[in-house]
Image 1 (tube, helix red, strand yellow):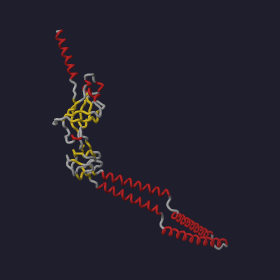
Image 2 (spheres, helix red, strand yellow):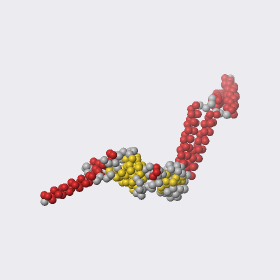
Image 3 (cartoon, one colour):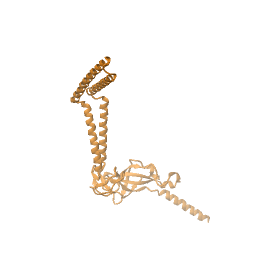
Image 4 (cartoon, helix red, strand yellow):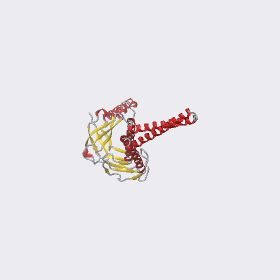
Length: 318
């Protein structure tokens, strides 16, 4: 029994040594490409889907058109508001017309003549009252007409000054601010109009159009997915035992199913955080099961490789 126990213990030790020497020197993963997801900015009906899925597109190509009739009306309204604000500013800058000033002067002369007549009437009434040929009521009426004529003359003179002195600086500044506000509102509505035409933001392949012609979108809903047209990258999981040996910029050999020769890629990113299991819950043996997500960029010569192919990446080892 004692010999049997020693034999079993020796087998266990050999097994542990074998496990410790069989740490992987390859990371497994797949070929991937950057995805560009385009989203709807308005809840409108899709009126055009001019390009089919799987097509190579260039930056600026129309991928999807939303109904823009409502937005065209808002742009026209904003444009009209801008024209109104500009016309008001031009009017203030040009000042009053000569005809308006001449009419104001005529009103002043008419008010002066009315005041002169009312003053004469008041003087006659005052003389009659002094001679006791008229009552106090007639004098009061004449005085009221004279004061009214004086007020009309003051008003006409102030109106003439308003026209001849020109526009106040504060009024000009307010009008200029209204024009700037109207311009900003118009630019915003024009931008909203352009966003109803969903266009490719870079050269890529149109991977997926989740909505159909005639469907209504929701704000923030994905309406098109693009895949980068350049070379793919290998998305791999690096074991914890090799994490310190790999950093961004390192060159690694990539084996791709179906290709006889390995490709040389550069690590463009590696995660700082492990995946699968919390690091604080592992012993020295289990820590080797931690994986760190990494991305290894392939050269431009591999641009024709399809996404999703399995890959094996050689990892550096002592």
